[in-house]
Image 1: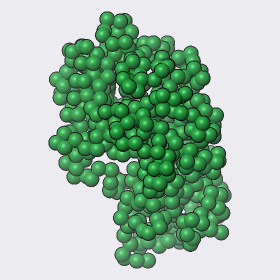
Image 2: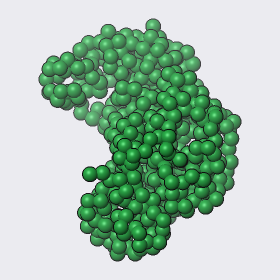
Image 3: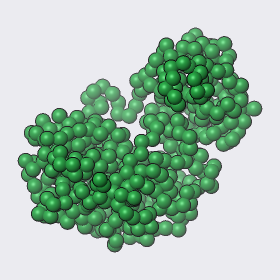
Image 4: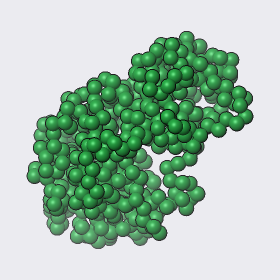
Amino acid sequence: MSLRGRGAIVGIGEVPTRRIYEGRSMYGLCAEAAGLAIADAGITKNDIDGLVTDGVALPPAIAEYLDIKPNFATGVSMQGASGATATMVATSAVSSGICNTVLVVMGNSRQDAERAGRPAGRGASSPSVRSEWEEPHGMAPGANTGYGLMYRRHIHEYGTTEEQMAKMAADQRFNALENENAVFNGQPINVKDVLNSRYINEPLKLLESVMPCDGAAALIITTPERAKNMKNNPAYVLGVGLKQGEANIWQRDKFTETPAVDSVRRALEMAGYSPSDIEFAEFYDCYTILAAMCLEDAGLVEKGEIGPFYEETDTTYKGAFPINTDGGQLSGGQPGLAGGFRHVIEGARQIMGKAGSRQVEKSDLCLVNG
Amino acid sequence: MTSAYDKPIPIPSNEVLTKPFWEATKRGELIIPYCNSCSTLFFYPREVCPNCFSKDLGWKKMSGKGHVYTYTHVRQAVHPSFQSANGHIYAIVQLDEGPKIPSGISGCEPEEVYVDMPVSVVFDDITEDYTLVKFQKC
């Protein structure tokens, strides 16, 4: 059995990504996003009988906060891929009949970490592979160091340049300029600005790296039969694919290849399309280099050719092949695992025809990579 | 050896499992986990072979020779002890025997490091308990 066309996204909601929301919490922001998505779908919370979170927001806590009692609930615990995975799980749930209408929700409050006595994103990690083998050599907590390693290797193998990667960051910033939900809306940058930003983990620069933010996002997914009677033009899930990779980047055989090689192939096979059919793409971009490698591995660009592709291609929402049309995480911000979820939300928004001034010209078929 | 060492020291997730590794580095030896059942060399140490699930595991002494597989020049360290004017190199070294290992590169400026640079192991006695494995240009 295939999931092709078995899930319909009928409502989306985003609490605009901001550096910090004073006096808010993750659960409060998640509840607000859930309310926005429910209203967008034109349903009530009583219609929700399924709940999927990122696993950071605990399903029982979300259910209690919203005073709902769904027949199905789970948290996917898939790090950055949680948004895409949660959407896949929600589609499976409505397709199998376990439940009918699922709320997918996740968010982040940086003050929550402070309240718990941890400065957000800092400090030595608990005993782990990293604390024993990596941090003594100066690996930074967080992901910067690992992506610096990948970036260096991609330059070595394919001749990719920092200027080519800077073009990605600049294109995405253009996409964020009119997006109220993006943390960097109204703040233009160009390729030179990216190149002149300071090195974090050379070759990785500040403007090629996500900024940790606050915010939340939610969507409502239901069966195609139910979607027919709802107010929005839905976005149908046509194919899904997942490939689990390593927890630690240095455990990979090849540093320049991502699990998207397999996950995208499986999604396209289910959908019955090839990479050349894709009209626009929303790709996980904690750093330029990761989105770059995934776009190659998806088959949208030949392996190793992402640099020349960015040199030659306008990837803004006005361009020949739009990528990360809401600014992505690089210019939209990363509200925890809702950062990766923004790619699903924006893909759905474009297909539903709700993207306003940044609506892409061809918006029937989107490839989302979480 | 210094009592004022302020960089992160290794925090094992299972100190029983990795004790032989850290005892070996104190003797000036680099040893890597080895599966007696399927002959797989692997790193980091695990309680079960990642290839065949065997628990019949041992250690193999390495030549200490390898090359820089990739590296990053860390300019913005998060841990304050690593803050310095010109940053430091964090590298993944591939040993001649195959396994990859995270390491610092000592004995040269960060700008001198390159992918494929041949390196050999050196041992850095950071505390009484821990001697780190690092690599230097051959």
